[in-house]
Image 1 (tube, rainbow, N blue to C red):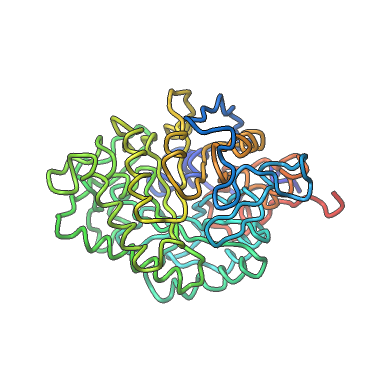
Image 2 (image 1 turned 45 degrees about the vertical axis):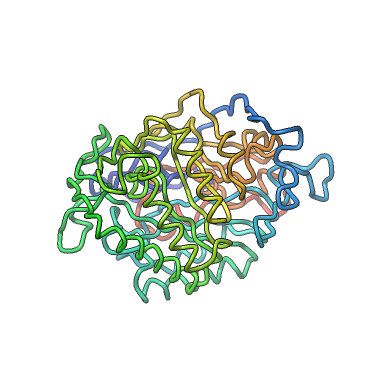
Length: 434
């Protein structure tokens, strides 16, 4: 049975737009009223890549690797299948499993069926980033997304992490807080969600979000501490590190972007002030688990859930320079071409300046296909490429890219259903004789 022929149970369950998946969900089935149709992968073109002042060796030699073709295939190596040294981690290829919310963690507790799901997508020396995982009971905005703030959740993650490690994979946990992208039904005691602002989400895609409550200045250290404890818990669960979710209109992004953040205290106003919350979270997490185990995801050019900025290039560059001071392992950035929910736009920006500025590993994401990914690696535009829907529907994606095999189509109707098998672990692999 092919992936495109997978049949979901009869349901009227509404699902987020499928373009959301590689980025984490923006709209809960409980609050979104659009039913998505079955889709095939979008294949945008990368466009011209500007090297932004890099010499001919741009992308080579960083940590002893970058764009070099180092596999046994020599000059014929597929760039995506070449190794990369990311800090202390020796990656065997450049194809990363993007953090993909699947809404199958019943009651916010990771489930045993996730063991097989992640193991299927594990290769020796491959990097996987786990689905967005809440740092506290106020961090939730979607039904059945996992958390990592209780002992039960930590214990539930352990066999999942062990499963990835048993196959030689490297596993990071993405930790998040949704902020105002929530409603009171997901909040403790039915309270309002918290944010940098009291302005509600303004989006044509939104059926209902509860107007948020602006965090008091004195409350912000409590949220920062939630991230610190979540990072500690992730390491206890066995994860190799954490990725702080600072993108896609969620809480950290609500502080970073000047079209949302209307604060007048030290966390609002100037660029430096708007970045303070994000950087204090990174600093707290670095202090807790070490910079060599910390990454961050950013989307300075995007405006998901109304989180836009008037000068995204300056925002991205400032964050890159400040993150260098903290010495973190990687920065995971969403392509400027991925600007709105479900849409791609040509625009004058690219990630070259951030790539030049940031000293660690750069991961890029945003509707990449095989050709785009190979071009980005071989040119030095990026070190690693994160794949979402293509990896969801092709658990052996690195192998398919290696031999340029055909890809399974994904079925967007099963992205967020609670079934522990359908649309989750039933996508077919290549036959063993290929």
